[in-house]
Length: 530
Image (cartoon, rainbow, N blue to C red; front, side, top):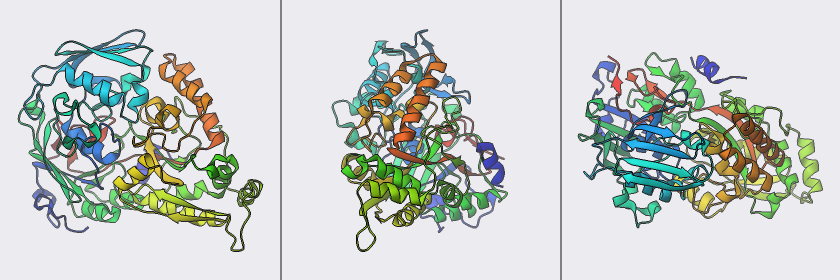
């Protein structure tokens, strides 16, 4: 087994189009010191209020402060809230807001913005917030600087959910009485953070500039932050090597390139700064389809996949082969001794025969589609392997590719898929990261990264719902163990690999790995090494 620390011990482009980024061939001392240059894939939105993928999160994190941030012990630290009080029964969270905070359009930030966002966005639209804040009955605002969250049940998970990238506060004066998903400010955000929006040229770059009215103006050390869109992983690697970009988050390069880049004296893969994102790669079935409602079909596909091979050849031995739906990087809740499906072609064929799917004259039992999440090379390589592996058991797979926005719509709005492969983060608590995928009440058309597979199991619902409001950690663990045992047995989703999420950065970068959210933070206080 290779854990996060061991992984980083092992880790021993083309010219960019925006003029601020064309630094290829320059020495380190010639690189800009007033501009931080990120690299991203395609970004479908510039706010993460309802879309929790890596692109929107890292961009929005610079423009929107949260109520709090977190230290490496996952304890709350002040940001828009100067202080707070949590009731002993975990049913009330009182935040005392900072004075003098303004939205980027000059309007004052008040408790109304917090209350409106919590009740209308976090509770209703956010893939994880729908579970985290389900029992939030109101946010009291006795004055402009006080926001009191009142829950009808204990809310132990809420203490981990007030970060700006998880529970983004939107300006009520620009969003109320509108469709949040289509509001034009999603493409030209107005936030409270240290950097404000300047320009978005889709497919090319996003430019932010210093917010001169930031409440902690002295902490804003950069004039601008630029996000360069480079969809191709190999081109991102070339950009790092040519010193054309400074930072990339969420495994931004091919894994073999990550190992190679880390050997350069000016490239780092920091060990810390992504602890809030224990990740898992998986295959998911569309359980709306009659074919996949037969567990024998799902079991056969599970037996046809060599997960050790996927771990070694596709994920380059990063992390470890997964044992269930909660990552090993959450040791308080993770279970190892779960029902499993070993690589066994004979057993897979037997199950398909029993399920009534004989081969035709061409050796084909049936045909399915497969849609890899189109943001990184491992997903495409997994799709190629998936197609080859299932051919051995008589299943013909059509691999479909599309841009990220189309994939999101196809999977979570149109539900037009048979199987997909993707990755998600467990976050700091399973009730945040995993409940959204397996809870039947989160079968929510149009909500990205929710229960798109339409899985429904009353026992799983009961365990997840109980764990979400249980304040005794030992009892919570038992509930999550029950959840894992059922899901591992029924395999609505086949978890493949527990992957340590990492970022890549130029060694001149300092201050993007000082919290468990890493470069997704607002980067107030950032500086280049001298």
